[in-house]
Image (spheres, helix red, strand yellow):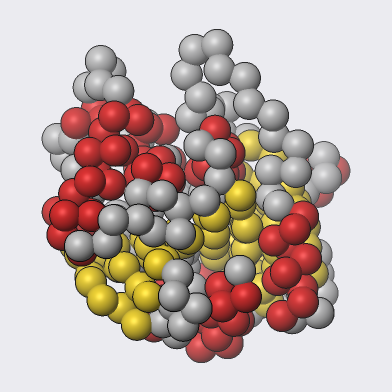
Length: 275
């Protein structure tokens, strides 16, 4: 049974709840405003230790609308970090995935909370499958665009948001100034939690996809609605079904994430430094 959550009430205002959550973060940390927010997916958690000085670590369950992550490898914490440049970073280690069945409001609550906390830049990371054969496991890739195959949206009612340049060209250029060899591709969000079939991967490739996963796209749409500038990055944890000849497993994803963590964590920390 789903954990009781104020966002489960269809009459609730998700933006008001995001402001309530942001106020609670400000109260617990003593930090009135954060500049940058990061959602750290599989393999990216180590970046939080390298961005700057962590001044506060909160359990997600202390914050209205958040719940403990269902997926191993996600920390279930929210951290306030002071970067060397004096900016404040809000690091979200408590991601709710669409496949958990809690509804889109809970999936994007962390993004809306980050915006309510003052963040104007949203960095979304994930572990994902690669369609490009030369992307070996452990390769970080910039997200240039996405294809949303969840058949859902965080936008409600007659809300029309332009998604042109959803993943900021400016921020991608900054990332490449830090690591010139960073490749980029189109991320395809499937509903999950099952991995894609080889035929579905070929479909994604045919319609223009290069990366397949189960997060990020819905969060990016919500971030754009909030007026945030978005940088998306995927860690290729495996080649996608049919591209990789061996069976897929979550254990493999976790293992690759752990191996790559020091390298991609340092990369992301360097990118944050120059934002």
